[in-house]
Length: 415
Image (cartoon, rainbow, N blue to C red; front, side, top):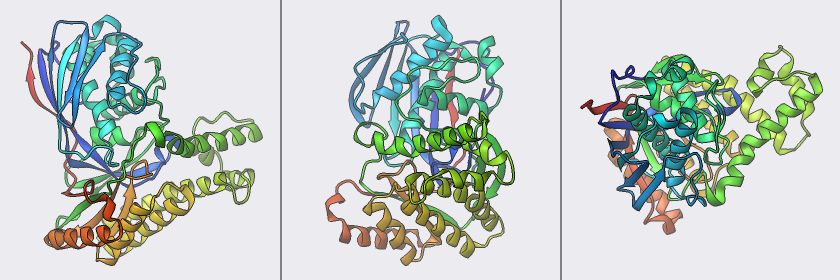
């Protein structure tokens, strides 16, 4: 689909899947809002080979052990935040949708993407494992697949549904991994552009703009050392942000008699809809804060940031990003002291812009910096951070990246 259906199932294949940088668009995708995204030039490499057995074995250089996943629609034993839960979601969903077409495989993962950092290593795992199994199994040649997935954007939406458990057109939903996320991560990985940011709206996935990235600037990513796990202990907090959107939408549909599926559909229903939504939520409640953050981020800040960057107005870009960071902290409520400090200190040290990104509750902060200043900036940023949070010294890391383009098939053996 991304590279065209193969003429026959592969014997072995290697894919590279980039990490995702959410420049702006915090928790907007699953509500049908918009995001400004980049695919990093770091990611996960997947080497896969058919094994002739009814099992998928997955290993990773980032963790010990082998995940052995039978080709079944029910796989137990990987709960509680185990990394292989994502692999199990891929296997069970593909078997659910494509049955005996799915073949067993041995898959080795190697990564230079910080795990549980906010750069979406979990979604990269879903994307890479699915792409490998699709190539080895010939799934993209199946009529069922071709009827339902006809573009990189639709592929991204389907892979997101593998992760969140929802149905996609005729492709029936299954368990997923227990999060109620959207398709922003998968879209960045499948549709990102080298040396550019991409602006997308969601539900359905629609490209709105491609914004050239400044040639003389780079992203410095600070991995806070506070793990941004979307499973285990942080799951309830993560899901509150999405569940509240569903609650607001239920109030709207009950009040209006409409049957809108996404908050963005409600907003688009009339010029007065945003104000009508405001009247439905309780003053001072988390619902009110969540609604205002969504409206501001999706309809004002993302387009303003894209326009400023396209015009080369980096000062205005930085001001818009500051506003997004303020609202994600005070209204969305998914920041921790470490990410809050990193964003503020990056700006004090001269970054053009800086923002936390990803699911929140830990993870990473990006800073936009002139490339020639990356080394000195990174050292000063690290020193400022560790002076305030010395306890994370063994877990913190800093990486430099630019938009590196979408996922790609590196090797292919058709036998």
